[in-house]
Image 1 (cartoon, rainbow, N blue to C red):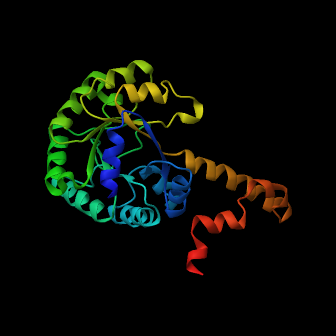
Image 2: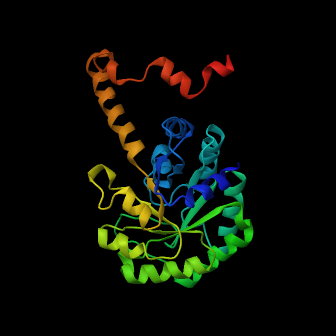
Length: 276
């Protein structure tokens, strides 16, 4: 079963499936080893792993290089962040073809102006809905059903929820397979988005502070995928901060030994034995 078909099978189960935000081959393997049904190649996490903020500085070429590491490393579907499609409708069609060649099962593209910002930052701007629909039609024409196409709108914080839902209805009509309304912050907003006539993806970036709606209700509302873009990376940052302090303090990590992965665990993640 190819990974696009794997993902489409998940969409038909009626449940909400978890995909953590990954940013390299190792983090993708950790997600797969934990039994996650898919991994989310988070644009923000990838940007930060390169050393940049999530403000649209990473190029398509850089993103594809990192995503290729992930699709090579795991067998589970990878859902990739394609930002704004890196330009107009022609650029977006080229992006879809390139991401398909990289082996992703799905990508999401958003209606922000280029360069984009993190969806939770202030000062967002969105393009006209008709322009975004043109991008989606071009992408669908380019890849057909070989790729699951996810339309994301960032209009909630710019134009309000009602207008964002209107936009999304147009995006679904233009060929989007999955609806992704960003910045759904309350149960009421989530339930309103649940009325959209398509499978839906939700950003669970608030997972570390508590979620407004549980996974079972999300599944009942038609949210098939839940992504956690930054939690894996935030866990890594916290752990490395602690280790750096300890190394600087005394030159050894023995005090944190019980919190470090064993050599065996590290080597098993990258299947060292198979290469011996």
